[in-house]
Image 1 (cartoon, one colour):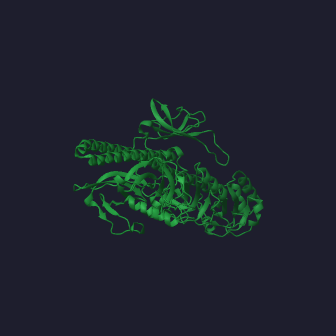
Image 2 (cartoon, one colour):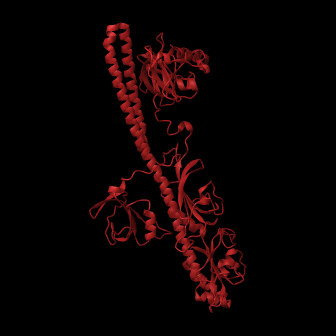
Image 3 (spheres, one colour):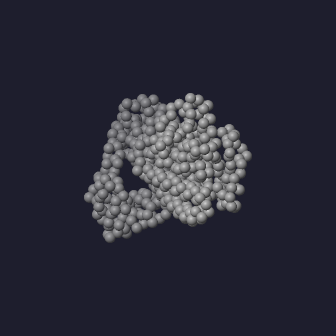
Length: 629
């Protein structure tokens, strides 16, 4: 038990694991200096992760009762894990493995409240960006009106406008920093929760293989112990099949984990069986390496076990794969072996019960017991049967060392799963320190994470993109640019052509309009067409989260543009504008310029007159009865 406690506490420094009796007194402890034997510990009922005070020290504690095995729940003992509160959160979280569990639909893992926090933070940031956008546009409009009013007025307004723009920039920068703090915090929470799922899968796999090891250790003990039964030794030595059958039946009545017990003579011929319904095996000559191996044993402490393969002794037709444990039965005079005893483990229900006992209470969780060669020995899920090949590739399986486990992700049936794979290392003298073999057993636990999102639906799709960073103007001639994002590409309009950014509001449908025209929207007493730039320019709509902005042509016509995200309103040098060397079909007759930013960033500067002509052309081509005013 102490060895098991040490293994369970290995990954949690300074923790204490205790076993308590029904009265709450400590029966066994992994650290008697912190929690001594006999100490009474408080219970928490259904709570988990509660604060517990013991001997003047605060602990973070959790508790578990027995989940039961085949209907037996034990004497009411409980396990309790305690971690000193001062150390519970002191260590930095481990580095997360990159590329693991990315772009997943995590609605099944995280509740709506947690997932709504970054969404709400981005909504607040969008509203702040819209307000700042409008503030900058008004400041620059005032500056332009000052220019038209004369130099005196311009000089009086320049300082105030410059200060207002600087203040708005600082507010925007602070808001963006707060958004990033929220997004990082939520990402860390989600990463921590995902890491806990992967760690849980690894732990449950270790638990499953530990249960299997201890169970099969008992099977190895049983065959050796019953081989020493003097009644069986005498019956085999004298050929008394009836007496041997009676002894086997009495043993089998007490041990329900076996499907059959039998004894055989030195020629491998079955003398007696424990189940009268399987009496057809009597007189049969057994075949297999395990038969000759058992008959060749000369030490009562030795045994053999078959590979997980059909032996003609298990299943409705006798051809289901199984494990057979066997040992030599000594002759009563001690001179030689009188024969052998074989016990057929009822693996199908027993292994399934072990795997299910190790599974967490999570919908869709499943576990497999597999050989190192990739054969399914047992499954908690009806999709896989004993003898099947492992349904997914696991490169780590063949080379995984004994007593080690790995975690990772795999994808099947359209879902991504976290998996834990733990290789058997035996238990006590059972299969300890044996070289790797194709028949070694490993437990595979799989916990569903969610579906893999498409590229456009990835978790990063809703995250606000980094703002376009312009180069500082080098000359005296400048241009104010209002930037925005469409299909993850930076576009812009001269700020003097942009009237305002709008709050999200209802758009009146225009059933006969082309796909690029979403409908009509009221602004300052007029109904304006709403043009989806993503659909118009790139044939990919900006979506329901699109930002709305009003622009106007030189002649005063107005329209609303739906864009992916608002960017900055900034000053660019006129000398930085370069005609676009290549133009898509929609821009063949348009005035399109490129503006280089820092690094690889590039912004395409459009013109509202071109957009107006473009949308009128689309409307006229697809709906000639309609006109846009």
